[in-house]
Length: 344
Image (tube, rainbow, N blue to C red; front, side):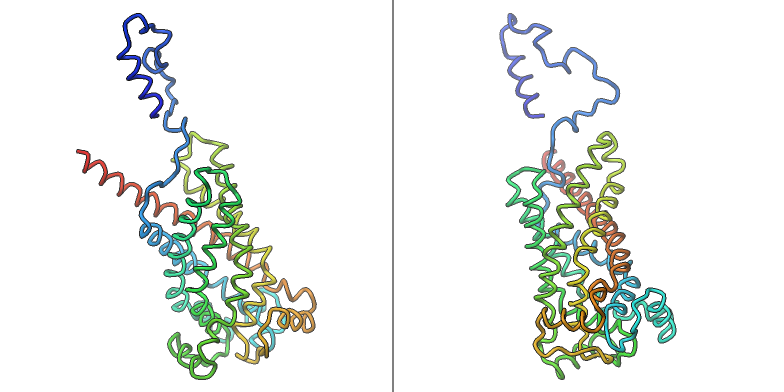
């Protein structure tokens, strides 16, 4: 709208000979249609000007809401991906659910949720703040820049996985039926005593290798889907914003989850090795784990848990993105309110 303001000022200061009605801006001598919305005529970066800590808070809340809401599905996925006797030899969802209910009842679906809460908040704070920072630096001011979105997502996951991996390992061990850990801190102390600090990061390399393509696909798909959905009905962007974010997030989460399931199986194997009869790997290399899975369960073993993984990530991403965007909108309103107060 800056261009319109400049034109108006220049015209009003010109001599009367140049102030002809046909040369005046349209909005000065013609009424606009009832549905005319000038804020949609120029592209404005959404949520521009948020502080770094505001991205962190919005991301932290979004991550915790996402993982807490979908935790039972994540427990089923972990049970299905673990080989050996912990707890199943079959990879069916029904068998996993029945095994959890039989061994611990409904509470078994939430075993390890405290570890998830401790890890998800800080990790997602890092995740989204790094993403937003990198996206701003790499996009060059262009909203439609899939390469910048993908690279920013990779940077975000490398940083956030360094924070989340230890608690994720604890969470997955607690999710297995038959483990003898009494809680989060008991698991942490026993792992440190029996396996050393390195055990907390045994799967970090695999996690990054999995999450790098996952986030690249996820963020690029999300940004593209969001633009596409907003382009379908731009007049209702403000009214249906949460629907757009949720739908785009679900599509991005489902696609990225399906593509990266084999590496997620490897990650689970490394984090749960030696627990409840699960295999232990001497080298901990991705190749050794892949060979063991294929030898023991065939190539289908690499896709074990793909269905609950997609069932987890599609709604989880929808919840996460809609919550995150709502948080950004809240902080934007707070910032705008403070700006108006300072001007007044």
